[in-house]
Image 1 (spheres, rainbow, N blue to C red):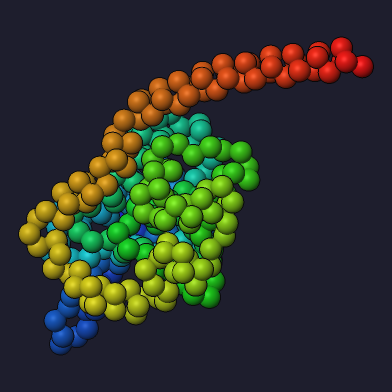
Image 2 (cartoon, rainbow, N blue to C red):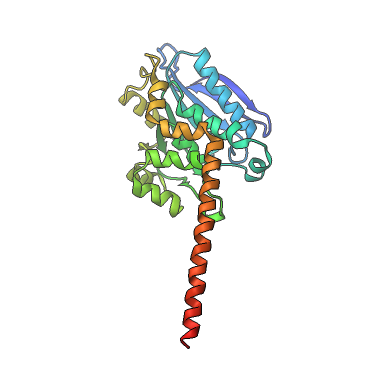
Length: 274
């Protein structure tokens, strides 16, 4: 395995290292770029992590031949444990300037992307995995879970839409409304991942599906933009999403008020009959 470059994650002393697993002495290598991120303690999606991630994707696009990008973690327990909520809420513009930007970059990336889930991917980490084109999960350890329901944080449009777009209605419900945890085999059965295994299985999937040449015509990213246009619109219209949510909440308040009046009227009628 040959190291091609590395990008520092300054806030944690971590790195994103790009390697090619097929580079062997005396043999022609395939253009498979594995980005391994190691940002202690659990690869949180912070501004510095995201900046480093996007830079690594930019380097591959602009300085290397077209091929396939694989992402994985150098921390055995976690692929990514999602957002640092305190940092996310205290950083002005975090969603549209960082998180949506990363999601958009992966969604429209002009080469095939494969997520190798070596460990847990919770909340934003699970969303990050879903923004890849393909997913392979460790069959023996690690869970995928959207657990925002359990601590009272509603999902915004780009967080929700990627699951709606890529999962069956039943799996979508189980992921969002049950906060169900999916191990590797359960994920495969539910259609969340394409296979279970490790790097060997990733390379096998790339070869079996002939992904190495898919970006060659230059329209791979364009095809994904059209394919996922509804998700892309949500990523690009943050203000519109917030306005829609405000309108929905106003209507909810109105309906709750009307419902409360009906309950109070019913209670009075019950008392008058006593």
